[in-house]
Amino acid sequence: MSEADFDIIVVGSGCAGAVAAYVAASAGKSVLVVERGNYAGAKNMTGGRIYSHALKPVFPDFEEEAPLERKITHERIAMLSADSEMTIDFTSPELAREGADSYSVLRGPFDQWLAEKAEAAGAEYICGIAVEELLRDGSGRVVGIRAGEDEITGSVTIVAEGVNALLSERSLGNPRPAANQMAVGIKEVFELPSQVIEDRFLLPEGEGAAMLFVGDCTKGRVGGGFLYTNRESISLGLVATISTAAAGENPVPVYQMLEDFKNHPAVAPIIRGATMVEHSGHMVPEGGHDMIPQYVFDGALLAGEAAGLCMNMGYQVRGMDFAVASGRMAAEAACEALDAGDVSAAGLAGYRRRMEDSFVIKDLATFSKWPHVMEGWDSMFNDYPTMAAEVMNALFCVDGEPQQPLRRRIMPIVKKRGLIKTAREVKKAVSAL
Ligand SMILES: Cc1cc2nc3c(=O)[nH]c(=O)nc-3n(C[C@H](O)[C@H](O)[C@H](O)COP(=O)(O)OP(=O)(O)OC[C@H]3O[C@@H](n4cnc5c(N)ncnc54)[C@H](O)[C@@H]3O)c2cc1C
Image (tube, rainbow, N blue to C red; front, side, top):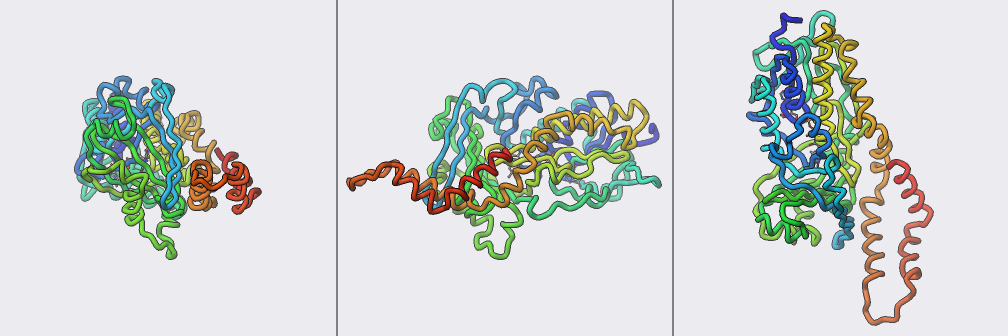
C-alpha cells in the first residue's frame, strides 16, 4: 500500500470530511482533502444547530475554540395556520447540560475552523476543484480519485461529498434516492443587534433559541420551517419534500412559501427591521434509515450525508452530529485497516461495526418509521394547525355572549375531523416516535 500518493484521500470538507481528515492526520497518516468549494464551507448550509455530544470526543476544547453562535437554551415548536400560531415554548437547565447541549452555527466560519484543525494536524488541502470519479483497479477496489486532469492515488478514499452523492451513485453503484426521500431547504440570514435578538426571544445574554414550525409555512404540505438565533443574526428557512414541492398540482413554489412565511404574523415581528445578508438553498435527505446505502467498499468508505445520515423528526433536526461522528469513525476504521495492511471491505469492516454500535445507526433505526408516518400524515400539515387555532379561540375568546361549557365548545371542533380518525393518526405517530 505504500505506493499510493496518500494513505487517505477525503472527498469533501464538510462536517464529515474535515473531521475524518483531522482524525486520520492526527493519527499520523498522510491525508489529502479535495473540496470543490473555493474554501471549506463555501457551498455548505445548515439550519442550524449542532448537538455537542459528537464534537466533544474529537475536539474536547471546542467550546473555547470553535466559532459557535449561541448555546441553545430555549426550544419552541409552533403550529401555524394561515393567520394563527400556537407555540410550545420550553426552557430548562437540562438543555444546557454538558453533553446534552447544542449550539447554533453558521457553516462558513464553522467549516473553515474544522478545515483549519485538519490542516494543523497535517492534512493537505486542494480547494476549488471537484472530484469527478473514483479510480478503481482491475479487481474493482477504489484506489484514488480523478479531479480535473489529475489522478491521485490513496490507499483508502473517504467519500464525504454530502447529500448530492454523485460519486457514490456513479462510481460505486449506489441507488439515487427517491423524490420522497429528499427535500429542498432554503434559508435566509437576517442581521439584528444581539440585544434585540435577546429581547425578542426573552433570552439571557449570550443564550439562544431554536424554533421549528409546521403548517402554513409549507402551505400544508410535508415539510416545515426553522429559525435559529445566532449572535447577531437569525437563520430562517424552510424545508419541503421534493415529491410535494415539485408536484404539478403544487400551486406555491418553495421560494414563495418562504416569502409568505416571512410575512406570517408569527415571523414578521421577529425579523422586523432586520437586514437580509445571505440567501441559500440546499438539498436535505429525509428518508432516514431506509435510505442508508452500502457504505463500506474495497478501498472506500462513505460518511455523513453521502451515507444518507440525516434525521428530521419535526421537533429535532440532526445531520451534523451524524456527520461528525461518522467522519471520526470512518477515519478510525481506515487507520486500523491501514495498520493491519488490509483495506478491502473486510479490512474496513470496523467502520460498519463502529457505526452499528453507535447512536448513528441506532437512532436512525429506532425512528425508521417516522419518515413514512410524516409522508402520509397530511392533516398534521394542514388540518391540525387549523384545529389548534379553533381550540385556542374557543379557550380564549370572550365576547359577552353566554358561554357554553368548554367541552361543548371543543368537542365539535375535534368531532368534525373524526374522533376515531384523529386518535388513530396520533397513535400511529406516537408509535413511530
Ligand atoms: C435547510 C437545512 C437545514 C438543516 N438543519 C440542520 C440542523 O439544524 N442541524 C443538523 O445537525 N443538521 C441540519 N441539516 C443537515 C446538515 O446540514 C447535514 O447533515 C450536514 O451538513 C452533512 O454534513 P456532510 O459533511 O455529510 O456534508 P456537507 O456538509 O454537505 O459537506 C459536503 C462537502 O463535500 C463537498 N463536495 C461535494 N461533492 C464534491 C466533489 N465531487 N468533490 C469535492 N468536494 C465535493 C461540498 O462542497 C461540501 O463541502 C440541515 C440541512 C439543510 C439543507
